[in-house]
Image (tube, rainbow, N blue to C red):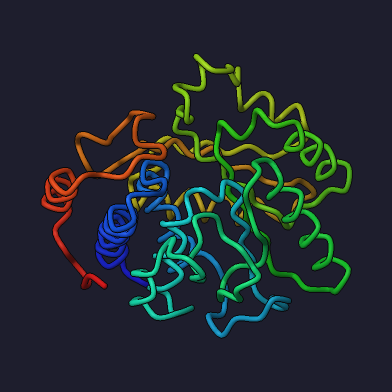
Length: 281
């Protein structure tokens, strides 16, 4: 298990990867990616039992499904740095015919990717299907999924939530990136989500709230709590409060960087705030 200093260094390096990937092609979604650096780092380097010698079936290992696929830069960085494919391949992000498309795809065979994503709202349904398959196969490992809070405005999410409760799918842990922002503005301005904890509780889920989604020690604790709550007859949802654009002062806490690439000057400013820790690609 990695120590917390290493995990914090990794999260900072992942942020550098995100910024450089998006800047290089002047395309991508840095804001949400930056906000989820601690979550992905903690998940892949400590929490999940997974194998970088990748198989689509994922038998006898934990699985992860990304529903809000536009934050692919953070996932690609963590996959590469945990051994799924060469870190140098991050330089091909969003290039024509590359494996690292803007939204994850399966047709190019990128290790670590089990579903394509694009239209929001679908990842939880796929995760629940995989979790049912594990139960049927006698596989006691867990299925993790991540969705955005703006994504909760999609109806399919709540159909899936009902399905999980009905089937007592207690081998599923969903994390909601609760940053309060979406592409057009704040969630409250676009379409208020109301009382999220009460909503999930009313749908029959075990609800955990993570107030410090960009504090590595806290995120590790939240994920440990979520794992401990599994296997008790309820699906688990972790509502993780993160800061969109975290780590760079001019990107922090605003929807403006949801899908916007930094200029040369902005990139230099941002990287100066995130000193290199484990080596740029």
